Image 1 (tube, rainbow, N blue to C red):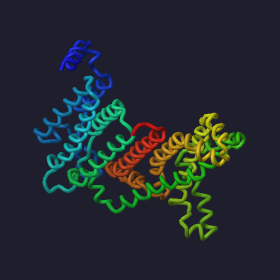
Image 2 (tube, rainbow, N blue to C red):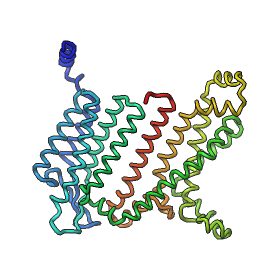
Image 3 (cartoon, rainbow, N blue to C red):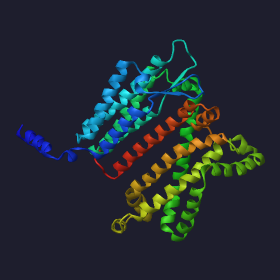
Image 4 (cartoon, helix red, strand yellow):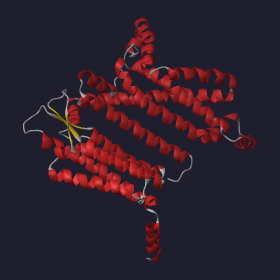
Length: 398
């Protein structure tokens, strides 16, 4: 009790400015501006017309709006103070849960009974609050210095909560979920293609880039040729790269019937897969070269002194020590490819970009979100999982 009382007196003795959190002040300001100025939801008379922004008080029943305002204000005040990271993490999680729950209540309050054409979508206020709480959560996790397993567990809990929310039907009245209902079969088909293109191009890049990186590490002449060429490939815009793949593959399909029967054509998955593979090579090869170059010479000499062959030194000493940097390159590739696959829809490659470009063509914002939100979620999850794998290979505590 004496120690706690002393700590409390010490905190009280601090100047007011030192009891405030700088990032928390920015987050609280963002929350305040959002609640005061930005619409919480958008009401549209039908799928494609411009919508009308509704503030928190207009979008919800008075009791729900007051409860939401109280929760968000409390979180803003907690963020401003130098509170324990665990409390900040809990507050951010509560904020996200309340935010997602409240937006699901908007259709029942705003849409007239029997109206099947009106659409309700989260507006700028919802997304800004989501961003503010996500920043607070990320900052809390960083301050807690959680291990890789704990971070993956939090990701799993978040994914489970999101799936439970979607399965409950609480968001059934929102326009993005109505777009999902209209495209349910196509959604899962395009999801499979999106993941297959991202992982397939990554697998090809690792299969080619790993031995190529080893050779580049051992041969300065090969390295001086390979890395500049791969750098040039990386600078080509993605749309131009997809276009460059179309002509030779189209000619190949016309000249070689077997290639056409295998799905190798000027449009479709083949040019997208090859373009993604080419983009993936530089991060993999460069990180293999850098990783092997950072292996201490004393380790190699010790392995040689133990009688290991060059092959044994490579697989038992050099590659294990270079693994964290190699995985860093793989992380870059996977996150990059999750986004680049979206553009592949322009050449018939499929993926979530199909909904993005359909929505742009139809001026249907919610159809765009149906493709964009899962793409962001996949890239975010891939980054966290591979960051955890990198930490584990570095020997960080789980």
